[in-house]
Length: 370
Image (cartoon, rainbow, N blue to C red; front, side, top):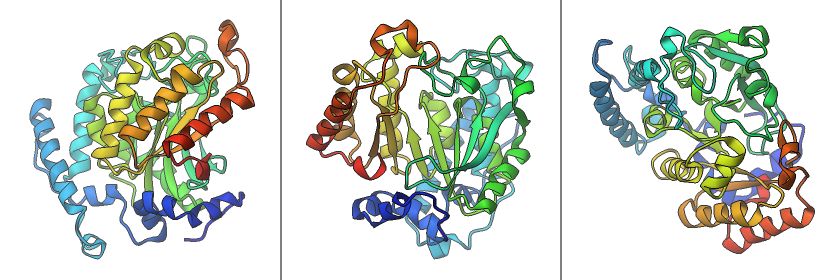
């Protein structure tokens, strides 16, 4: 693989032995020695009818997940010879996702809107998915660039300091979504991904807004993607167990946010109930049951070192030992943050350093990607 780099750290980071160890499968996909998980999933045969109740399909999903994880232990040379099945594990997951749209439970808001019939929950996304932009991103973590980043319109959060508010929040109630973004189906999304691969992307990075409302389209697009490319989930991570089960075996790399170290701050600044409980649960699950190759983003916020940053670091050190963290100092008051005096400023250098020193104390790996 030829690296197309604009930043020197994107090369030097791969000289770090611990990074190579923790992201070995991802690096193997880049080098062509490992197979992307979604390609393997397409070789697993499934047998079901579209009319089957979702409960029956969920049972088969669990069975196929076990079959998939047994295959992961086999030699990659053997796996390369497996044949794509017409009705496969990805087809099954897409079918379940579409059934969930009738009473949407993709995120933990669980609005239960019938998105198939045009109803919209908090994210204001119906059954259709909308892409606001797609390009080679050179500003991501050094292990990720050049990243084939696909930004989806809409979000299930309401962060008062959102730095992507133009695609997640600000348009709501003011503009028609089709006027500011491109509606895509599964084939079109796959085409976008393949074009990014042709341009030199080393991963396909689903972000937003947030990709969660678009799980059905993203999973469906995997049927039509063909490249051996890392699939990367870049999200606020406020998924339900049900929706996480639809993608946990298909994603090679996880790039989740971990914003708040308690439920109260999540409610105050993002309008979310049970924030810490849900996010911690989902991080733990992809660490233990998914690929386990995780880079957690934590944005240091002013006046939130004790209530948020340190509890998050404590949890990561105790429960997510394989994870790498990007401790970010880029917070700036935007969108509606001026209404909250305590976060209406940038974090001080002392606050950022206190968080990073605490991460060092706990033995968390953060420097190579921060």
